[in-house]
Image (cartoon, rainbow, N blue to C red; front, side, top):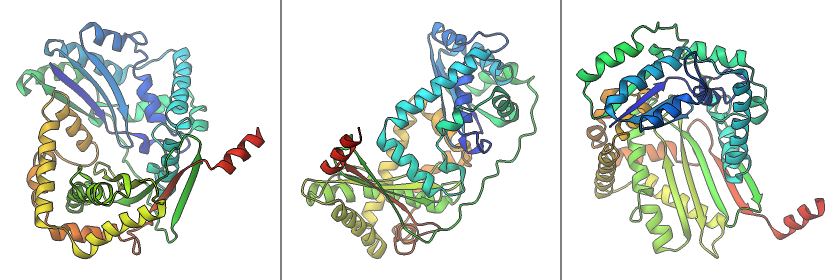
Length: 410
């Protein structure tokens, strides 16, 4: 068995202004036919071959993948090469797929108050930057797509020299080289434009957003701030990865043990950092208080845990155990057919190299307690924010008075 993944170095953050969601919409259209394949036949063929396929879009990439038996790889790669250059969805499918995307947004975002709220928090955080626009796009802009706009996007970005092909499984480089050459070798390269991104301006005022909604049963707070990605600052990113593991890497780590197990002040608490981004990334802190504990009290308790690290640092043992858990997790992720392809694809499309991925276990092993304290002081000090102040969100149950007012409006 082999997993074939082709990652295009274009995502939602590369869309023209006013055309949000274009990259994701185009991901859908890539299954809607070429000059030799009817709409839907790509996936039907994969299933007939005994495999499965899918695709996904991020801010910095669009990826398509198939898992099939190795002897069917040549046919699959020919199909991928075909839709790289010969995409031609019929007009009726272009229109119908727009409705599919609109419905996807309704179901996953518009009808999910928490998702919609997080989307709005990111929009407030990433002022003047495309990461503030959701990958799926804004509803009003999706409705206005024209085939000419989508075709232009395809013609600019979809080319062999803007794609990374990753094959993971029961195959060798010697075996696969002629197969790849036969499928893609005659496709001409294109002049790919630079991926220029706007600059996020500094901010001076704190922002708190509040959502009261009938579907929210327990109060929750979220706090999101901008921090460097691995591509922006490798050393600090490695330290942030270890800090995340120390604070929120399991039931014995600081936040859960101190606030959920020992003090019983929270039913959940989290600290999440994503290192993979071409530009600056995000760090999320969240918590849901236990019964009888106010949201403000839990926020202060979490803040105190962070201040403790800023002031007193972390122990050698905490760092050692966190690094070991991270290294173990990396081994387990790669112990599958598709795992390695996913890791390499995400990293190579967001500014990392093959060497960065291969050497990550050794590099993260060099993180020290002093580095952890330094990056906590640099990025987590609420009184001295880095570049931009964080955005805090409060998700609250609909109060009785609010519900009554809503009923009156009906």
